[in-house]
Amino acid sequence: MEKTKIIIDYNLCGEIGKVDPRDCGKCLKACDPAVFIMHETIGTEDQQENPYDPQDWRITPIWGSLCTRCLKCVDICPEKAISVKW
Image (cartoon, rainbow, N blue to C red; front, side, top):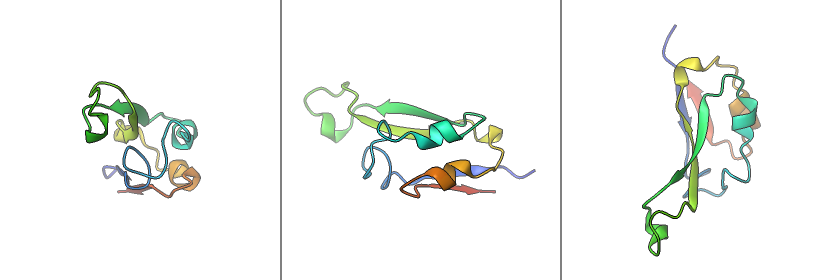
């Protein structure tokens, strides 16, 4: 079986995107094997006042080897920010 590559377009979802993943998180709920995590990004330019204040969040596919290639995450993403390739 070929290696699965899950790509998230952070111009659509995440700290520089149109959607804050804390308000959505649909991919997290749709993924049965729990491939994704949601985490804060620290030290970004937007956090000049306090670089450790977690204001920016993103979804990251950490466990791609667990992906079953069901594409539920792709189908449910309202911004079409997720693609899966193998």
